[in-house]
Length: 503
Picture 1 (tube, rainbow, N blue to C red):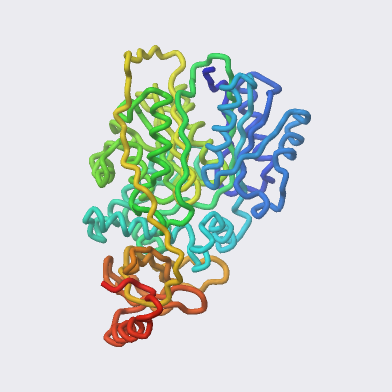
Picture 2 (picture 1 turned 120 degrees about the vertical axis):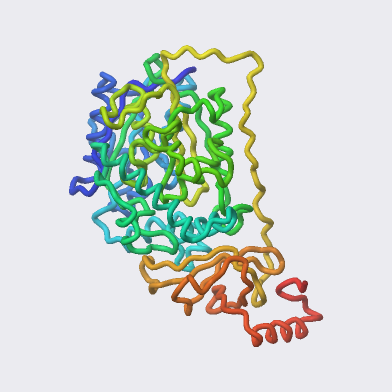
């Protein structure tokens, strides 16, 4: 059964004193009024972590009560920072099955009342616990991915910095035109360079802010002007170190493939998109993973103006998570609200796009391991699908790295990527240098170096010495003494097996 959108609603995003349930009720009321309905068959709720952010659980029942809709089934969905999109997906299938005729999708988060360190610690709980032990945060992992991207595609540090700044400048420009955005001020390259480094090479302006806000959508089986054409959802390994690539997300590729097939569309059919830019480079990677541009070419499209508001493929006309704000539970749904505004011609004179018949939203959960892609199109658009249609999007899905269970204690490794984290979570000193190290056996492990204060002393693919300290991997400069220790270790264990395979 086809599924349509009959109403949308959203609060302003930013810093507010209102309780979370009040903000979500406001968004729901706007959507219900927009759809001209008073009751629905069900509520699908997206809140990522109300337990820790606001101290409340059973939020689905609380919202039904707050809305005066008790008696109606209310279900909470959580897929980390893609939670809003995850709730939308669950609601979509409820209507598509024919079991529900009209449902309310509601998503929100309240975060700004907490300190940055505490909010960072809560957000970091979505990271694999074995990596989190090192003090790894979302910005730290994103920074390591940025380093890998720059290295793989031969971008100098200055060039990478320039690309990242262009994403931030573009999205702040778009956000300045969005009445719902948290940041409605344009920034310059000078502003970007003056902002503090959060996790090298990412600066403050590379990271989406901590935000309060809510969004809502009414889904219906009755035809309207906006149709849900395709949805795709995929996951990836919890630990980043287990992935075959540090420059793309399998979960986006697989989700996109499913969405394109369901919609019977190709990347070239998409006219505009909301792409998850919690970190500036994620927008570039997202446009490549979605098939809009070839790997390593997304930044060129940005430089050429293709992804700008008046470009051939506008990306994040809302300002994205970067400027609109990122209340983690709400962002995935807010992307879809923006697409509806654009399709209806309700985005405002300065921000309204010309071609808005088909739009796509990509939402990232966790560090790229619970991703969703959703495609909307004009319901009144007559699209003829040729007989024997087949997709031209055939992404390269890389298998995860093989995992070894052996206890690796000491040896020589290769520095695959690294960062120095300055905004550390609670309980960790700043700065904190972290790295992904490939051992001689081919396994990749997370490691730290308490003594490195400047990331400029490190170099990709450089050999380092890896050891353990207090149950954690620690890496250090490879010296003659380290080589001697490794040689002695190998000879001491000739009859016991060695920690690392000798070359």
